[in-house]
Image (cartoon, rainbow, N blue to C red):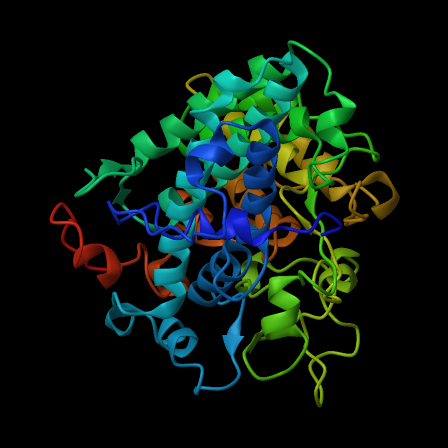
Length: 433
């Protein structure tokens, strides 16, 4: 990240979730001072991206790793990485003390709580453009965190309090959609001022990111018409990107932790870990994009490609092809299906070249030629999501939603971390699998 994240932004978030006592550093600004100052809110906003995208505890590592291992996108190279190895073994080997899932849970809640600190104090911001930008930035990271909870757990708290109540994943998704729609409306009221864009960490096109996330979570929530409408509002221009930037001081978490070596995880093959019936043709240009062309040899990780080539590689918040695949799936699942519209969107992904994609992802394959029937089209959409969104952290959610065999995933939902169970009497029983 070109914008450095101060220790202040990090220290203020450490105790937000489970503690009801504030331990103050006498040499630091207090929480009250920070949230009553616009520059303090910007500092907190920048801290959201740092917490989300840097180090082994960040969602950029834990979401990708947990989903990747559980759905066989990744295999574990060294069983000494015990938490990752237990995810690979799956089933009852995954328990509440697992560090990967504990970090995923805790960091998602910390990011959500910090975002709330910003959103709850926007009343001090008098410039409408600044207010819209801060609301959009904080909402994006709050929504991503809520989405992570909904993708991996059957229920979760969405408020910060002692013994916070758990709500269903449907309610979590509904809350994510609500705040994204509110932020989108606020953002549209005024242009972003230079006082915001010059201070906020760069990389995110806010309007398009808000719409894509609305579409993503509306699809997961079964709100298909809303998903189609929001996905249609996402620009396909090659100049539109939404990424988390990195540098050597704040490195790409997956590269730094796993893909810069061959000691933690890597893809087990160069076939997107798909069953034989769903494998893509050898001519699919995305194979070379996502996999190291030299394969996994010596110290070279098979995944050292695409968004994981170096400490400085940016990681996308969304990939452009996701919008078309959301529309395709929603058009099949809605009450009045439009299968021809679904085929059109499938072809947008199949025939897209690298030059037509803002991130350089392009299959450059022929148009879909299979049966135009719901079951066949859903199989094709699942295949394309597994490839286009490879190592994005969404395959576990996709595997459940598309009704894939349980044998294709190590667990269906995760158990609740002991860190929550030991401090919240409302924690439900763990799911059976």
